[in-house]
Amino acid sequence: MSDTAKSVSGNSNRKAELLSTTVEHIDITSFDARPIIDAMGKMSFTSRDLARATRIYNQMLEDKDCTIFLVIAGSTSAGGCMDLYAELIRSNMVDCVVATGATIVDMDFFEGLGHKHYQALEVPDDDTLRSLYIDRIYDTYIDEEQLQDCDFTINKIANELEPKAYSSRAFIREMGKYLAQHGKKENSLVKLAYEHDVPIFCPAFVDSSAGFGLVKHQVDRMKEGKPYMMIDAIADFRELTDIKIKAGESGLLMVGGGVPKNFIQDTVVCAEILGHEDVAVHKYAVQITVADVRDGACSSSTLQEAASWGKVNTGIEQMVFAEAGSVMPLLASDAWHRQKDRTRTPRRWAKLFAD
Image 1 (cartoon, rainbow, N blue to C red):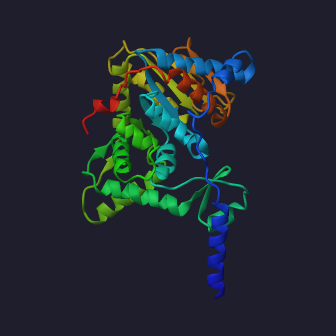
Image 2 (image 1 turned 180 degrees about the vertical axis):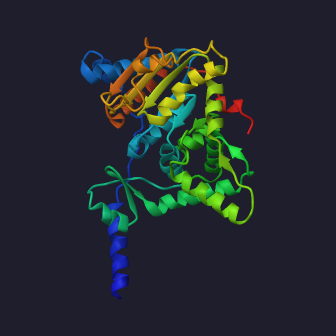
Image 3 (image 1 turned 120 degrees about the horizontal axis):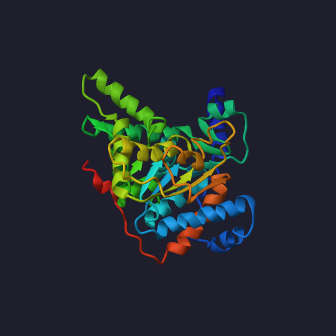
């Protein structure tokens, strides 16, 4: 065997070794967190904050007039919460999703195509990972070659669409349709949202694996002298504001912060700008984050601070300063077990738009 062949074989073996243990996503239906949350409510510090946040989420679910927005930033989907979010869709516990492109494309759609995330049992030099085409998210690995399959699939979807402007919601719906026809994972947030008419918005959609596929789509079409599709960020804001205007009362369940958090909160202000001064601020709000308040940000302001902008109600809100992957399973399991025997009317806000 030549030195080159030995090197290729060695790299292949090393890559297989590093990508040998898949991340297993937690199943919130398999355990009942209600006793834990009840006990934490009698404690102090973050435990009591989490118990109160869980009670607020249950209030949202019990409020027959409340539309619930699930807002996701960060990498909890890659870290093991992917099936948790999918279950909230399946069980009619959220009505609309606002998330980062990475959450929707690089993580959920990626697994919907049959790919996996892997536990990093060791973290070698990142230059070594690069030579093996392994991408790292803290202690989680992604096979870059599989991620490129995600890029090319996005490109394929774009090539088959009418060349015009689409909101991220409209394009993600096409992604869900693709998974419904060709996907390899039943428990996909994107697929289930398509099937349950739950709209998904990504205000910075191309800041993800989708960006590569869409850029290739435009470049190829430009070379051919043909029209191309594009993502309309203004339509995103308009459509999400339309939902808020028609929804009335609303609640926010937010994991992380940043652009998705600010985007959904700004719908109240946008509604006012459009002349709908009777649109209420978000009645309920929960945010789970590790972001700091001392730099004036907290990944897009604390909930109390957001009240000064006319975005949320200060009466029914809770900040939980914790790593979301460690507390969301408890909150979601508690809520699922309390709500499983109740009937909540599906909002099906995706039907508001004629794509």
